[in-house]
Image 1 (cartoon, rainbow, N blue to C red):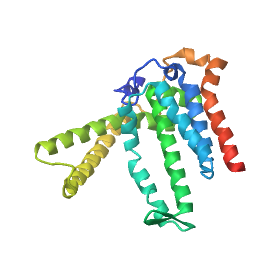
Image 2 (tube, rainbow, N blue to C red):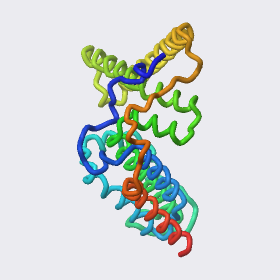
Image 3 (cartoon, rainbow, N blue to C red):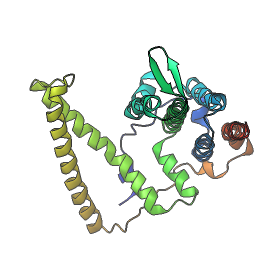
Image 4 (cartoon, one colour):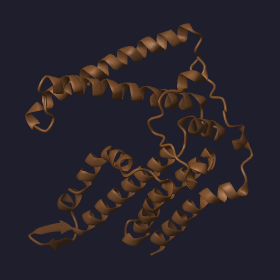
Length: 260
């Protein structure tokens, strides 16, 4: 098992030459993780520190020059979570507030705002990180952070075979549409569920076959991910400052939200 096994179609990366593309993977990864930790500790009451963090994250999207359709597709992953958050103000206990014909909970409204804002920041941050950094470079950065090699190998395999699973689902969808299936109607959800279940089972069987083949070729549970860009090892202070200002701002806002 060589590093070539890890190189497939990089569906997460968006080719470009933006300022964020030029920042090495290691500072970007550290800054993204630190930024998300600071956002997670930001109190949604008062609302404006978390709102500023969301605006800062969203303001980086034009700087990264990521197409809008890519951002929308990434948000589709958390769409059910965001929809569920919209129900929280109506089912939570607390001081009621009249909004037109509805009475909603003030505490539930604050909780829903925190859920939506933090989930949105997470999606935007992950989108910027993965769209401006080659996946291989992210794996190298994880190894440089002393992440256990088993975890790095699992992430590498997940990214490699997620594309194959998605392609199999697209093929099944096209075959169903050719037979008259239309996903817009709720009563046609049962065939989609059956196809999804069968695709998952076939993928699991394929994963077991691939694992046995890897063991037969001497796989020991981890594989080396060589650093294809040795210049990353000599990071300068300017590159770290270009990335770490983001978590610094988030940390200040998190402290303000906890003090107020």
